Length: 215
Image 1 (cartoon, rainbow, N blue to C red):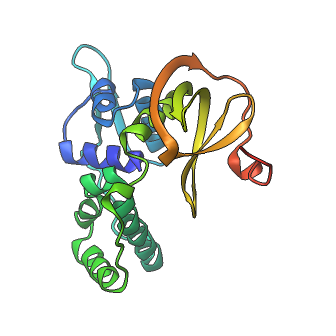
Image 2 (cartoon, rainbow, N blue to C red; image 1 turned 60 degrees about the vertical axis):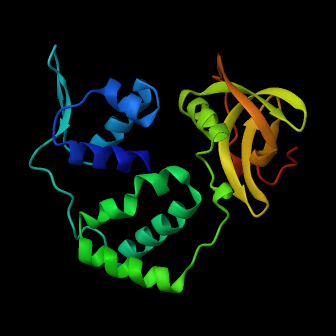
């Protein structure tokens, strides 16, 4: 989602910015922003870089998002995903990403959204938003920088390497490693701090490890 946010920011600003400024806006490291910009370039987004004192980055001013790249089915699935996500992820609710898609094709997006709002009502406790609470913001930083965190869960303090989030029917878990692979329920984490320690070993992704016994 951050890639789309960066793209919309560059489209909206319509002027030069810097990697440092983007890192501040999106609360990640400059290296992470540079990787995001590289990904956008690979996807064909014309990002222009300027060197020197007055340097920076900007989108080619002739660039626009093609309105008809997605099929009708693709477009409906995308709006459905964003509609549900905005109800459970706080930052998406605040960023109002769907309204930004309306800038690309207002009538098409509005028609799909109106139909969704009549057929599908998401009624969740506001406190159940995921990924962007204070605990997750610190974990997100470690995920971006591949560093350890020290967290407190059910009265125990553990130093571990966060790998990914896992959303199960019981709630949102942190899949992590501290010599063994674990799933820790996010709601059980009462405190977390970043560590400078970087993990450089191999990791087994959750999808390849979920059938094993995980504490």
